[in-house]
Amino acid sequence: MTDEKVLATTRHWLEQAVIGLNLCPFAKAVYVKNQVRLVVSQARHADDLLEELDSELDRLVNTPAGELDTTLLIHPTLFDDFLDFNDFMEIAEGVLDEHGLEGVVQLASFHPKFQFDGTEADDIGNYTNRAPFAMIHLLREESMERAVESFPRAEAIFEENIRTLEKLGHSGWQALGLGPHS
Image (cartoon, rainbow, N blue to C red):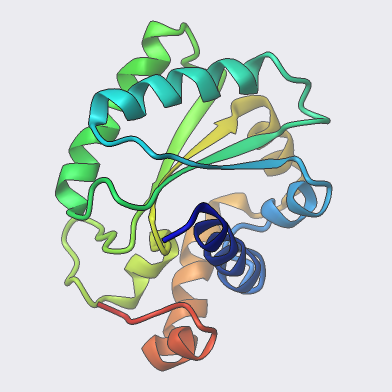
């Protein structure tokens, strides 16, 4: 798959699911201001991806938030297995420590087979973190804090997302062009 196709698929997911279903009420503002960087990784190994993560962390913290607020590091070919990706995310969290960025940047993960602990693979609630490709989301803590302060019930977002997805169901997810539910 070409980088252009990966980016188009990712934008479709952002626009239809993340923003369209309001799964993240903070996403639209930075997306419409073009403050979201989408990077397609061509890493062939986890070590290469860690180098790209290093680079993207440096870029994020050294660029004013008004220009770049958040980054999605997309890796369409690495980590087909969710558990392998989940293990990798633990290593990625260690990179934040190495950079002295704990409390400055946080990482969130998305994966086509994302599964919360204690749920069945086809549980619709898993779709809050399902994306067309494995992705590492680099978020500025300061921006998240500002967004949460402006949102009256930030702690209820997750529960609201589950209700939204339960109403939508697997067929509704597919009708949005977001792929199969497995």
